[in-house]
Amino acid sequence: MHFPAELLSQCWFLCGPTACGKTALSLSLANRLNAEIVALDSMTLYRGMNIGTAKPSIQERSQVPHHLIDVLDPHEECSLADYLALAERACLEIVQRGSQPLFVGGTGLYLRSVLRGVFAGPAANWGLRRELEARVEREGPLALHAELQRVDPHTANRLHPNDVRRVIRALEIFRTTGQPMSSQLEQGPRPASERTPHVYWLSPERDWLYQRINQRVIQMFDQGLVSEVRRLIQLPRPPGQTARQGLGYKEVIEWLESSPSDATAIPSPELIDLIQTRTRQFAKRQHTWFRNLEESIPIPITGAESVSELTERIASRGA
Image 1 (cartoon, rainbow, N blue to C red):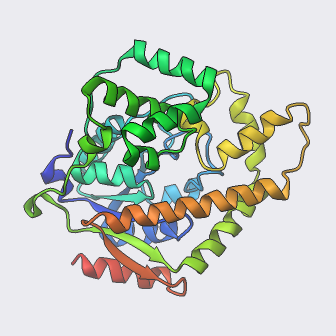
Image 2 (image 1 turned 180 degrees about the vertical axis):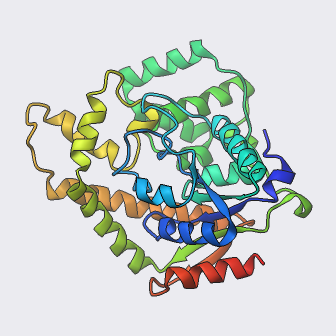
């Protein structure tokens, strides 16, 4: 499944690791380009997951039209193919209005899928899935992840052991086709004539970024992250496998479930530190994604640049 080349040529991309300042810059760049923003993020798709995803505020979204935010309930799942279809539809509507689509986010797998296409894979084998799910119940997620490590180490290194849904899908593909999912996903770049030249990613200095990440996590707790997560798990249909794995949400859910009777519990420093550590690790993986994607152009930042300066730097490169 591929994004239409003609449509892709009209798209811009602003990517980068978490907490590097994409939101403020995206609003400025969208105004400069006469663009509408398409979220390139696997978690802002979900309604009610606002604080932990650092989702653009209602006020920010009122300044520039945003798409693919709050389109799913937390119990729903969204495959790569699903995201690609939603993104294509949004971009077609944006272009028809005479604007440009500006993808903004940090999900490297989504970025590569839009730029290069996505391998749909074989149809679901529900019997096999139930068998693997039962094994998780008996042996735990690490056993399943260890099997994936043996047959498809590249995919196993990319997936967290607790990302059970994707681990099961990778094993399903291997058992069904006899080939590792990684070998089928690794599609090269499109021919130069079919690419967009406007793929930019913010490459911040590490110490500056890590300080911002640590501050952001503290802010999220101050803004009510625990209350937000508590509301989510009390929904008639609580978060599904994907939403539960969201960075910050997973850790808070586990913390709440470990002390369900203590509704007034205050997050421990250890919980905050854990989320800060995992967020820094996530940012490092994001950096690797963008650096290794040859279509993407790094925009080094120190943290001292103004939004207007970065807007001009990117817009002038695309002129």
